[in-house]
Length: 65
Image (cartoon, rainbow, N blue to C red; front, top):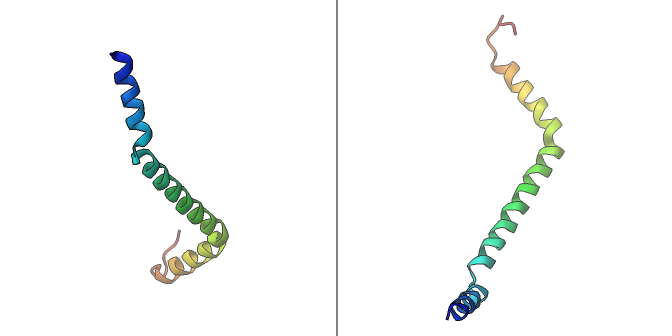
């Protein structure tokens, strides 16, 4: 009896699409993360210069630091 319940659970788990959907979402999230990391590495130096220009432009006159 217990073996039949276990086999029934295994059969249900193998026919379920929930696990596949979770894996697909995980792959999509990891791909998006890789694109963001790649963009940061490629544009990192340019962004630093842009932020420095902006910070100098909005700094009050005569301020030090």
